[in-house]
Each structure stands twice: as structure tokens, then as C-alpha cells.
Image (cartoon, rainbow, N blue to C red; front, side, top):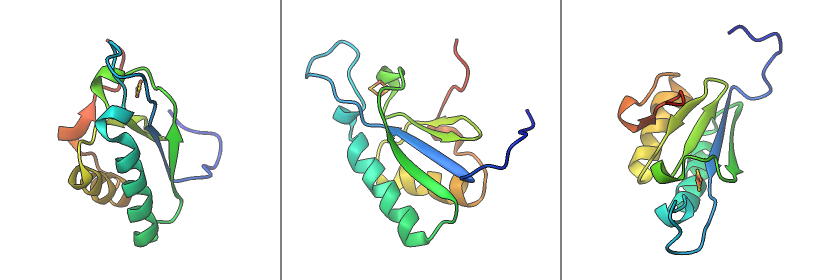
Length: 111
Ligand code: FES
């Protein structure tokens, strides 16, 4: 789909950090380290001086069981990074080169 507007950010990452009570049947991204990974991504992007890249906090993205859930727009590519090394790979491969990290992707379409 071709956009009719100029994008404000080249890459805009939304990181779910929603927290639910322990034992909730759906779980949550916060219990899987999402806040730590969001903070890490934000600080690494700042250190690298990536232009036009924004890392934002998000509430529940409704894919709780698969989290931690991060989604990169405008492409709408979903990732589930488990540690700092995964975040480094997303930054280097997707945010810098514009490629995808297939092994960390979540399906983009609803089943
Ligand atoms: S708690 Fe993260 S997607 Fe729902």
C-alpha cells in the first residue's frame, strides 16, 4: 500500500509493557521482561544515534500469550524478543538495514 503522507518517523516501535496480576490466564508482557527490553532498545537506539526512529511504550496489543510483543511501523512487523541480544538483532537488521529478523517474528496476520 502506497502512503499519501510523509512519515514523521522512519521506524516507530511500540513495545507492550502491560502488566497483569500474577497467575492471570493470558499472562502479560511485563512478566516476560518487556520493560527491561524496551528500556534497552530505547537506550541502544539513542547511543547509536538512529535518525527518525522512535521507541514507545504501549499498552496491551492483544497477543499476550506470545509476548513480549513489539511491533514496528510503518511495516507492521511483529517481534517477540526474549533478551537483549534479540533486541540488538532487531535494531541492527530491521531498524538499521530495513531487513527482517525472521526467527523473532510473530505472524503479521490474524489467523
Ligand atoms: S500484555 Fe502484551 S500483548 Fe497483551
